[in-house]
Structure formats: structure tokens, C-alpha cells
Image (cartoon, rainbow, N blue to C red; front, side, top):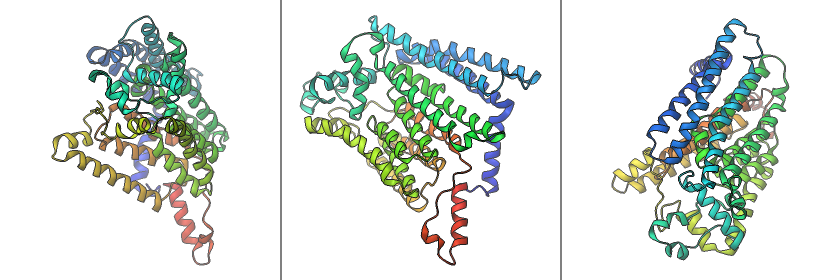
Amino acid sequence: MIADDPTARRRRWHWRTLDAAGGGLALDLGLYAASAAFAAITAVTSTLLPHRAWGAIAAVGYLVATLVALVQLLLRRRSPTSPLVGLPARWAVTGLAWAGTALLPLLWQSIDRAGGRTDRAQEEVLVVEQAGTRLLEHGTPYLGPDAIAALPPGEQLMGYTPYQPGMAMFGLPRALADTWWTDSRVWFAVGTALALALAVATLRRTPAATDQGDTRHRRDAALLRGVQAATVLPICALTLATGGDDLPVLALCLLALALAAADRPGRAGLAVGLAGALKLFAWPVALVLIVWGLTRRAGTRVAAGAIGLPVAALLPAMLVDRDALTENVLRFPLGHGLVTSPAQSPFPGYLIATALPAGRLIAAALLVAAGVAIAVRLVRRPPRTAVAAALICGYGLLVAIALMPSTRFGYLLYPLALLTWAPALHRPVDTPPIPVSDHLPGRATSANWRAERRVRA
């Protein structure tokens, strides 16, 4: 997208106008009100008991946040300079909303589960905790194909651990003690909070964040909106309270992009590498960041962590039982395990795979074609800023989720958060280096013009 395009400029102006209405409080009010309605509907209609339990508590939390935002908006009309309606107050309301709609339901369900309730956690919580137990006892979080086949048919699905080996670390506390605070969701929340706090601190220390006046305010407002998308947005709050495994992965990816915006490629690689050691969803983000690093002549520093950490996590499991690793990490996600994944959200890829002859092959071909198109985009126009990297990751994952034959609505939290995070990464001082060849006589003007257009994109 070129900044000089009138249509693009108009679209961006409309979004900024909406986001800034009432000092940002109007959109806050809409977010909390819509979320309260979603939580209330979930509490009444969901067929998943953990979701219903979340909705019953979260609806109250969102309603309180809605009322506070409404009071702030009305107060702002009478006293625009009141500290109760400024950005720090909005940050406080966001924190309280996250506590009431994600952390409180999470703790409630963890305590109920420790007290004997069996309907207070999604299956991924149990899978991660079982993986932690196996890692502690056998040195690998995975069961081999023979061990899975020996389980009763109704339990074979739970025998799979379709995550990277690092995810089992969140299950280790449960392997050591059976109590509410060893619930893996508690540690997912701790990891998420730490990664987001580091991301916020990193962006606030970048040059654009230390500027005075309107630039700094816009940057902080965009950062708040990005944090809201990763915390109080229902798709994230619900996921953290009932399952939770995606949230630390997402938070580490956001941290990696924040470190990229701060021009710290080595640390960005380490952050996305940690995410990749937990789940495959981080690997596309790692690839995009490596390409970004190449434009900074720092591709090796990014790749050292982005590739090195996931490989280091895989090696012990491979040495202990290579067949178990292959069965869980490759065969099962690709639909070639002993049982198939229950993920069946009606996105285009799933509908094509189930409704058309040879539909799974067609869906797979479309997914590969989308991947090739993104690869061509990376080669022809590599991302030279963290903003561009975040946008490519967000839109790319959105297309991939839409085309995957087996997927879930919950996976949308990745593209939604990444795309909302992108404006907070903008740095007016972030001018990428121009290749030496572009300084040759007769090429400087056109090369600099092209580089400027890419930065503005």
C-alpha cells in the first residue's frame, strides 16, 4: 500500500478518525459493549462447558468496563483535560478489563478444576499437562504411534501432543503438584503477561516513543489498542481462560516485532525462536523476520535465534524417540495420524475439503499457492520495517487459516492481534539502509525514490 495513493490515504484517515473519536474512548466503549454481548451469548448458547463458564463471569467484567468507558466519555465532554479520561486512565481500565474477563475466569476455573470439576478446562490444557508429565518421566513429551494405537479408541486423540516440545514446559508444574496454581493456564497467563510487558516497555523506549507532543500520544494510543487486541478482545480472553496455549505464542511474536521496531534483530530472533519452540504458528513470523533482518544486514543474527531455538528444542525429543516426534508434530497436523483433528470451523479450506471431490487436495493446493504468492512478495518487496513485517504476518496467517482444511475460529487471534499491533511499531526515524549498488551513478535518484515508497508502504 503506497502512502501517496489517495484511496489508501482516505482509508487510513477514516480509521484514524474512528480510533481517535472521543480521545479513543468511543472505540473503547464499542469494544467493551460488543464484547459484553458476545460473552453473554456465549454463556447462554455455547455447547462447550468451559466456554459457558467463561461467558458467565466475563460478561460482568465487560459490562463494568463498558459502564466505566461510558462515564469517561461523558466526563470528557465536560472536562476534556481531566486525568480520568486521558491515556493513563484508559490503560488502567484495559488492565482491569483483562483481569475481570480473562484472569478471574481462568483462576475460577482452575480452582473449580482442582476441587474435582471435570468440565473446567479444554482438552489442550490436559494435553499440555500430560506432555509435561511424559517429559519429566521419559525425556520426551510425545507418545509413539504404537503407544497411541494401544489406547482405547476414545482416548487416542488425547494421546497426541500436536505442539513443539517447548510447550510441555508449561505442563511441568502439574507434573510436580496437583493444585490450582499448577494448572497450565496459570503459567500460560504468566508467560503472556511477561512477554507483553517486555513488548510495551521496548516500544516505549524506542525513539518515536520518546518524542514530545502529538507524535508520542499517537504512538502510545496505538500501543494501547494493540494491547487491547491481545488481551481483552473476546477471542483472546476466552482462549486464555479456557485453553490458553496460543496466548504465550502470540505474545512472544508481538515481542519479537517490538524488538524489530527497536532495531534489535538478535533479540527479535530469540523472541520469535522461543515462540517457534512452542507452536508451529510462530514459524511463518520467524521467516518474515529473517527476511526483514536480511534488509538490515542482520539476517544471520535473526536466524540464529529464530531457527536455533526451535531446533534445539526438537533435538532431545528426536534423540529419545524420533517416530513419536514425527507422529505428533508432522503426521497428525497434516491429517495422516491414527485419528483426525477435530478442528472443523467452516472456513473456505474446510468447506472445500469436505464438499468437493478431491477437496482436501484442492484445499492443499490453494494453501501452497498462497504460500508461494507470499514468498514471491517477500523476494520482490522484502519488509524493510517492523510495520511491514507485521502486516505481512497478519494477512498471511489470515489467508492460511482461511485455507487450511482443519482449523479453528480461535486461530484468528493471531492475525487480528498482529494487524492491530502494526501501527504501534511505526518509527518516523526508521529509514532502511539502501544497498550499495543503488549508489551507482545514474541510479541514485530512482533507487532512493523506490526505497522511500517502500518505507511509506
